Image (cartoon, rainbow, N blue to C red; front, side, top):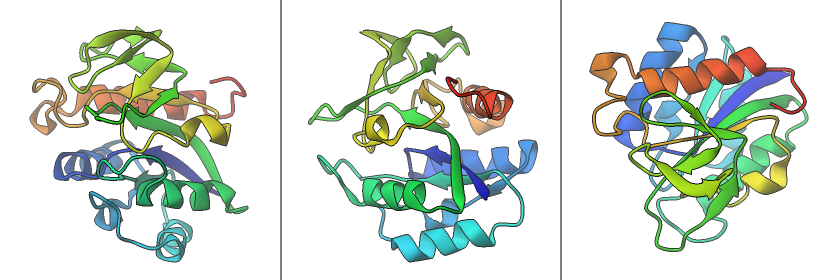
Length: 187
């Protein structure tokens, strides 16, 4: 079973950040397959997950703002349905989506690194919504029974507080929480 962490972002900042953090905390980043929106096929993505030598495998998925089930979510479904892959958690990345897709989340990590029961916006600032986030590529997360879904602002950004030059501390904290809580049935 390959252990996977899903990340619902695929822009250049997210790719750089996840590559950096995979080297720092361990794992394999498949950022080279990410795009905004996703263009890689499910078979290629699943083969890459199975070929990864170091776990967890970080998989970046992005719909590029397509409403409903877009290409990133088609891949997400294929990954979750693979019997030889275990998704140990997901980072649900906030976005300023016009169609206002949302998902329930276990909790959020805000731009100051604080765990919050509220959602967060793209800048990592808490919102009024308890336990949910507006974002792109999050539409299916509710339907997948994932063990832990953490809301986070825009990876590598958040008004510079998650900059790679600072070590991307917000994203690192969220990933470490998933790794620490792995195996818990309720996150």
